[in-house]
Image (cartoon, rainbow, N blue to C red; front, side):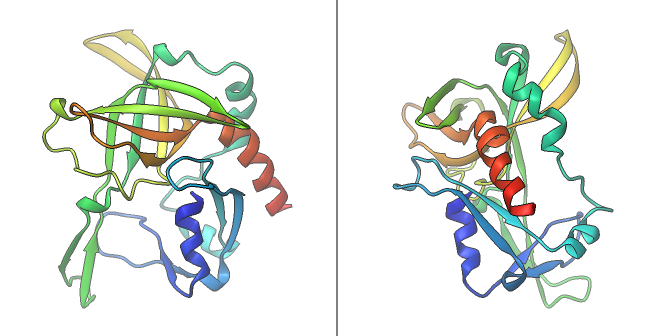
Length: 217
């Protein structure tokens, strides 16, 4: 997300979460290249996209612990004939800042900060296009879960995942996990409902893909 990546223009260290437990892997902002894909005129409305290119040696450090999602592998399918929206389960995943805590030091660190992820099941409740970009709104129902954060600030740049499945309740088996969007904003709560606004799959596999290729070529 551009509104997050822009903060790396200032001298700082970008921290990466690789495993559970205390650890520290950071990248100096001087070694990072931020590619602006779409800059919003008004925050929260979109388009709002950026790509953070990290040094190759840092990618090699990450590889033993995390998988890099291959956009090329599913690009043609997602642009020409994506799986049916109503035949999938949708998950919005990210790390709400409200769940972040400051903890006592451990593993040789003077102090530590704990990040707690959230992956909530929902749907692609509204899919629409505005100019050259597509969007997906996923509705959050607060009546269904009292432990939901009061704000989803912090999940920008996370993932909207489309999970296809086989079988029927109560025996449902996931088949494929497809990156289908990127959350970047939230609407106010009204009548116990709010929407998590995401860029859709076309914004990723068309617009973003082309700009990433340019930056890496």
